[in-house]
Length: 177
Image: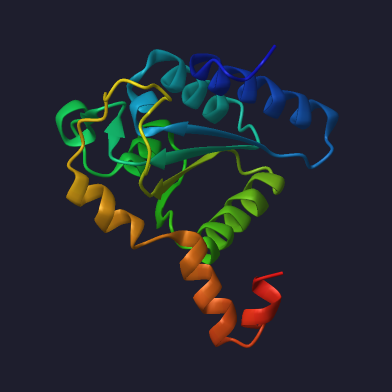
């Protein structure tokens, strides 16, 4: 079954996490979804079951502030999606989704926790989607162009490149190859 149907992703990942737990192979499942997916039934059902069974599962919310073109501030009654984890007795945390190192460190911490048998967690990565929600020739993106331009200045790839150059890990020449 393809994981293209976002409504099935959390339930499929829950099954994968259950398999990892039953096989006792220290495997950890991760599922990625947008902020709009956090107010759908499948998300809550998966969070509940994963918590009850202490499954090794990381729920990763790529919070770009919009469910298609609907601002999260209009559609979601809380500002911090990661706080929904508390309803399911699991830890939740938020990170700057444009900071590669912060995302890596947070994910590593939650994966280790899951491998120790401590169950699932929710990681909210606050980021932005530069392009429309889907590809089309019709102008369907209603977000303000100034907002998009401001977020493009926070490009995670460019920011990581600057960090690597500053630390002397790479050179300009090696990046251009």
